[in-house]
Picture 1 (tube, rainbow, N blue to C red):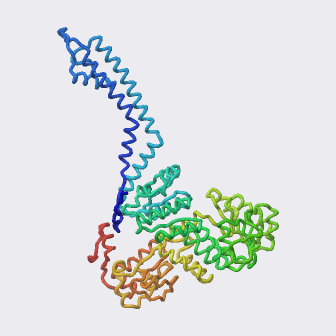
Picture 2 (spheres, helix red, strand yellow; picture 1 turned 90 degrees about the vertical axis):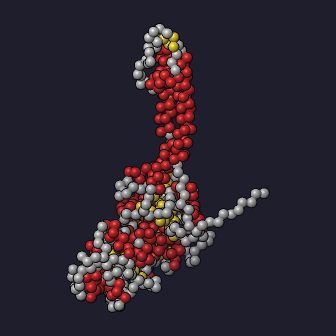
Picture 3 (cartoon, rainbow, N blue to C red; picture 1 turned 180 degrees about the vertical axis):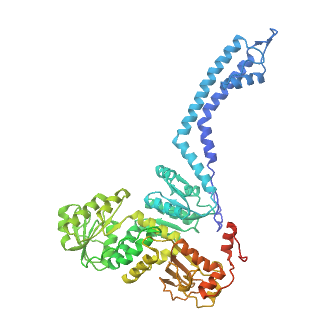
Length: 601
């Protein structure tokens, strides 16, 4: 029995890469071996024969070509270049041999070129070349990047969003057609992509999981097992990396959480939260969906609040079961329609539920559900045609129903838009919006968690402030931190106390006017979170602030933080000589841009 000693692992990740160059060379040599051997043999036979066949010099003496002369003649003969007879005119026998060598070499070259063209068009060779090119692109990255596993609808939305904000991404997907779309997409920067199994740790290494600049992994494939494999590999190979994973199965989510601390996104669970919020706070649901959509999104319409009463859920799969549980927790009566549910069996829900066994798309089944006395309906099957049919039939029977639907395919988007349901679940959009919010602005995600706990008036007031200050199109969302590094000009006054949030948001050119900025969240140094803090809030050192405002407004705040004269005027009303004070982070940025780093202006 052989006992292998276990190697001690270092806490630092090993940055190893498999160079696919050797694989490319191996494939070429293996496929071109026979043609190359054929050419070499033909060339050697031609040289040997030409050296053995006697010739005559100008004096008529019998002579033989040296091996070098024969090699020289065959070099331009076998390549069909043609140069002449040297060092003297050939005899008939020599010319016959050269003629035979020409035809043999042409056949040999035709065989070699044909094999080469076949190799270039071979799918396996193209994959090896693509992997080689992808590996070199990843190895050359010198900025933080994210690995996106899966380029479906959710993956495409995430990649485009991160590309728009200047975040480098790397894509891995088993479908080569999706990877080809990367070359056709209009991205600001080059997005490396490879067609490979993301659940294979070797492929994740190829995608750069060991790269020093790898900043995180997003497992967004349509296969929960693949997403679980990616989560496991990331936790074991790079436990320091943040991981965001998508699943629609509760048991898989628990398995994912067993490996490190990944962020698991379940779109069904999120939609349940959204629906419950829309029932109690339409303004809160409006605010949540607007902020999740990202900068540039238009303000969505505020939905109506359904009347108290009975709801009908069509489809009792994973999504329907989760949604029914949320509705029961909200204290509503419930009717469930599904072909697979047993009317006399257990539903797995805590509460009384009326069960109707049958196809929800059948008009007779809808009539049995008593839609004329219901207040809301959820079309939650896994088939878009069925869901659209249910919504249309329900609206025909009761146009006052609150309608919620589930869209499974991106190609059905126009049809659902034309139906105008009150609430719509698009799983890929839910996953993409949350993944983008969590990575692009962690403070934004922390703020979104506070919205369900606020009343409808609080949310309506905040929406009104955003519209009044920033318009109906969501502005960029950004943060600042009050410390000596990021706010060197203002930190002394903040340490002295008495600096209010409203003071910080005064205009540098006229402190009697305020910047068009809305403060979404204040995070104290001790971790306390204050959503939508009032202008009278006293600021402390170490505070983090999340703002919504345009680029000009952001430059105004940053000027107050780093320019002493601006800070003195904006925060205190004093006029002093202009002097720029930069923290370490700002100094590096200004040095790279060739700007002053602390001297008088």
